[in-house]
Amino acid sequence: MTGTAGARLLIETGMNNGAAALAVEDNGSGVRDDMLERIFEPYVTTKPKGTGLGLAIVKKIVDEHGGTIAIANVRPHGARVDVSLPATAEQPIEQNRGERPLDV
View 1 (cartoon, rainbow, N blue to C red):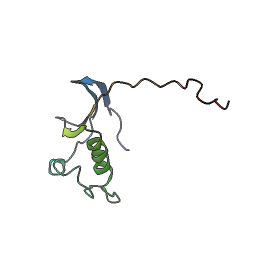
View 2 (view 1 turned 60 degrees about the horizontal axis):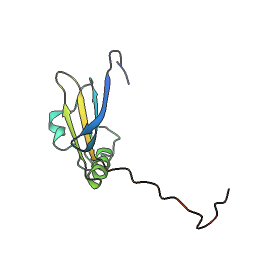
View 3 (view 1 turned 60 degrees about the vertical axis):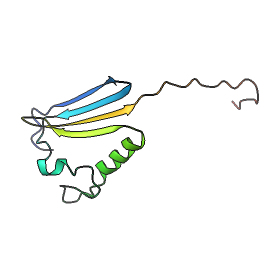
View 4 (view 1 turned 120 degrees about the vertical axis):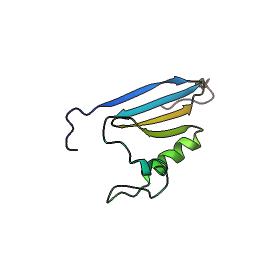
């Protein structure tokens, strides 16, 4: 990457209405406005050697876990990705109570 002086990457995590939230924001060039509505479509890319599958796969994974993902430009410079995944209570680990010996 060239011209990284002054580059900024902000990562936020937290809980929001029972969901685990992750946000990543930078101060780069952002996403072209004409690409924002298509950014999660398979085979959509701006890279000469890109496949356009990365964000499509990410969206599929997030969707299959009942979450949401969104990308928006941050003015005057940069982009922000917001991911939200439903949080579930941690399940207790069942104890093995001598039903079979453990191989140590």
